[in-house]
Structures are given as C-alpha cells and as structure tokens.
Length: 247
Image 1 (cartoon, rainbow, N blue to C red):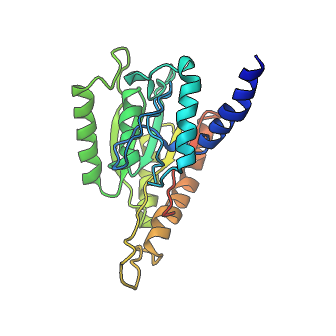
Image 2: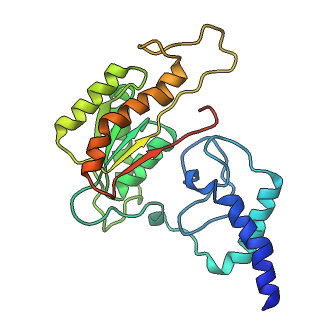
Image 3: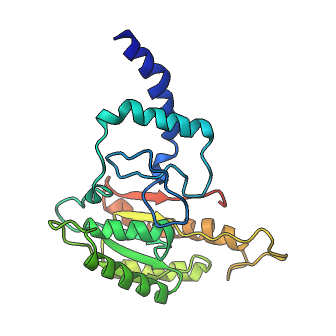
C-alpha cells in the first residue's frame, strides 16, 4: 500500500501535471501533424502533439508512457461516438465556428454537427463555406461519425472575412437577422505569413497588419458584436478562442 502511494505521488501526479496544459487542443483533427498512439482515453484524445505543431520533450513522452502503463487498467479505449458529447435535449444548440473550412475548425464542425449541434460555418468566402457544407454532409452520409440515435445538426454557410471589419459587421448583422439563439462562438480562424516574406507586410482592408487584423482585431470585434446574443442564451453559453504559436 505504501509503495502504491509513493508511485502515485512520484509518477502519476507529475505526468498528469505535464499533460493537463496540452490536452484541450488535442482532439483527433485532420491536420498534418503526427498522431502518437501511446495515449488513448475516454475523451477520444489520441494525439500528444500540440495543434500548433510544437514537439513534446523526451521527458514528456517518457512520462506519457509511464502514465499509460500505470493507468492502463483504468482507461477504456475510445469509441467513434466518444469524440464529442451529444447535444443536450431541448432546443437545438447553435455554434458559430470561424475558419470552419480547414484544420481544427473543419474537424470540430463535422464532429459537432454529427453530435446534433447546428453549425454556422463562418468562412472567408461564401464559396469556401458552401464547399465545406457539402463535404461535411457527404461525410456524415458515408461514415458512422453520426450515431444512429442522433440526428445531425444543420450546417449554415455564411461569409465572414476577418480581414475586413465591414465583413465582420455584415456577418454579425446577418446572423442576428436569422433570429437564432447563439450558444457557442468559436474564434478559430487565423493566418500565418511566411517567414521569408519580403517587406512591406500585407495589410487588411482597414490598414492593419494582416495577422494582427485577422487573428485578433477581427475576432475581437466579432466577439463584441455577438456578446449580447451569448448572454441571452444563459449561463451555458461559451466563447472559445483557439490559438497557436504564430499568435
């Protein structure tokens, strides 16, 4: 019994502490980053490489292996339905995701739609948004992502160019005109410029440096415009902001 306590204090707790800062962004996304298959928990987390692409240290990897060995009897493999909690009963929940046409945004949109959430696909152009709508709908029809007992949510394509404050205002006005409650706003879209890009830096329609204007100022305005809608939805509403090293 004493040895069990010593093992828990010296190995399990430090290992959990090591990973708790990384786990929120480690959903099984369709990105170019590798999956490290030595950790698989109920939540469906299968990767231990940050979405920004940063490598884990050797010590973190070793701690992860130790954690799996120690806790293996307590962890059950994830099923395809365990990636996302199903939408709660009652009225449909509505989620806006910026940058929903690729990466984490696209993957989150597909999984949340499969779980019954209505997704507003806020993309830079309406063409990108409609193409994403078509691809996710096709994916839901041809895969087992959606549980048989769950009706997939609606996918609503809309244009929101975060590099244009006028476009952000139009999007907020168009969404408000739909008369839908807003439960979650996911500020996910972002751009990253090449390190070898010659000066001067590209700018937004409003004159801001492109990455600052898109990744920060556009999302800040969008959040301010939609904050009243989130507040009206009650204490269960959420504002979610993703980030990476380029931010």
